[in-house]
Length: 118
Image (cartoon, rainbow, N blue to C red; front, side, top):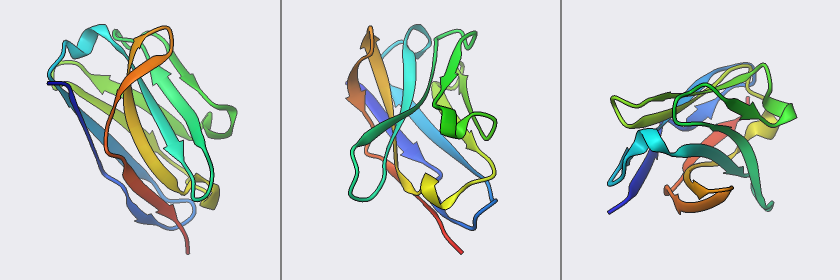
């Protein structure tokens, strides 16, 4: 069965860095677009970034451009989100998700908490 398991969250000071990982199993990882989506306390889901199977196309929301990088290692079936220069407004639960087709995110991980605070 399809599984997505995030890890790497935690508490970090403003300006710090974290690297999130999403371990995928149960499907041919390299053939799917993959997404990072976050949810801040009391707010709705917010798209962060996505990447195609071959890592040739990446997209970011404006507020994270230049600070975050989405990566994948198809040999390890793992998706990453490298987050640098973190801000308090980046505080959220971060989810990875699989795109079945045309922005239809059909499987989600359980999420990992990122807290940016001094």
